[in-house]
Length: 106
Image (tube, rainbow, N blue to C red; front, top):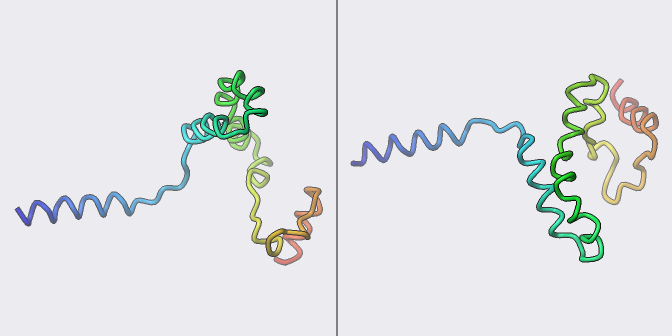
């Protein structure tokens, strides 16, 4: 029996060590759906009747990211490049943000 336990443990540890790179479209939809229920009642009046639309379109930015090559760099923000919280020096325009980041890396 100890041999079987070792095999099971080894299998579990091997499976757990496989890197997970993203949570995928399903998780994006689920998060948006569940977020509606965490809204204050005043906001829920607007969002709850539209929950199907919100859930279905949660992945639109990801689809756009894969369809348009220029969109990938705009898909996320590396907030570490902009100092410390509360990020007072965070640029408001895309061009200014690009200049600020690439000035640090010649």
